[in-house]
Image 1 (cartoon, rainbow, N blue to C red):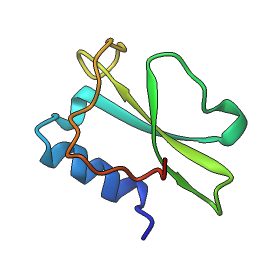
Image 2 (image 1 turned 45 degrees about the vertical axis):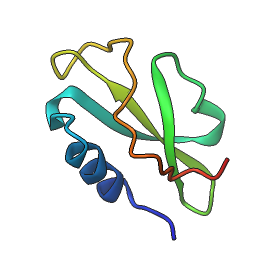
Image 3 (image 1 turned 90 degrees about the vertical axis):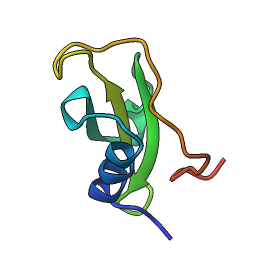
Amino acid sequence: MRESKSDIEQRIINNGVPADNFTLTIVPNDQADQPDSQVVGHCANDTHKILYTRTSSGNAPANTSPAQDGSSAEPQ
């Protein structure tokens, strides 16, 4: 089962990360390698990736990882 952006967002919030402390962005596959971002899912028939970026105040990226529950939206 594939997760939508809103499903992933809710799972991150449920893991204790405040909604204003991260962003999820949908980008084409060739733009998915971005500093301080982590691929947390994919969509549009695998042509786009969903990137998670942790922010310290809702605006500036911080060097931390999202809370993990052991599952992944992206097959390894």
